[in-house]
Image 1 (tube, helix red, strand yellow):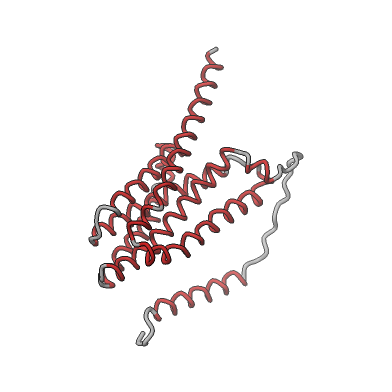
Image 2 (image 1 turned 90 degrees about the vertical axis):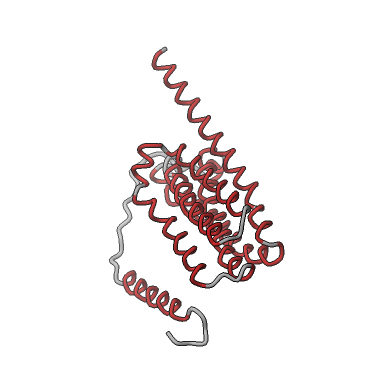
Length: 244
């Protein structure tokens, strides 16, 4: 599309897709929500905020999304403003990142079955560690490319594990409110990360921006190790009771 405004074609495509989505949704039949047959009373939200496994699930999703959005938002800005890379290079890096986010989903069920939630969560966290290491060691196109690809795969693993773990902490009648709180927390933190990325990049630079994620990733690593140890001890206790 010929225009003095950049990316006008992309925005027109997005607007068209949104209009199509509105048309599809507006023509959907109303769904009947089946009432829960459970006689147990729904637990208050305070119960879940005191539940370690709920906090692990929330942390996994929040760290996955906030770190990913934070670095993804800043990367093309850094490539263009700090190093004057052309749009072809920036486009390639961002496209690779998006593919890395979603292609692993084709194998996610197999990975969870083979490795389990705990191992996949640990791998996702270590991928985020690798993102920081790559991002701080250079500014070539390939440094940005590897960082964004690792970031995409790490996001997929961490967010998947957080979502799966969340389903284990609530009863069927509690799912709507627990999922709502979880999503509000994740995407609220994501919004803050996205809004702060540009400000931090242009005021402090790329290295400081990346370094800010280090304590967050270390915290996620500690949470994951703690979660693995708790589940392992519980399994060993159950085995001991069976053989006892």
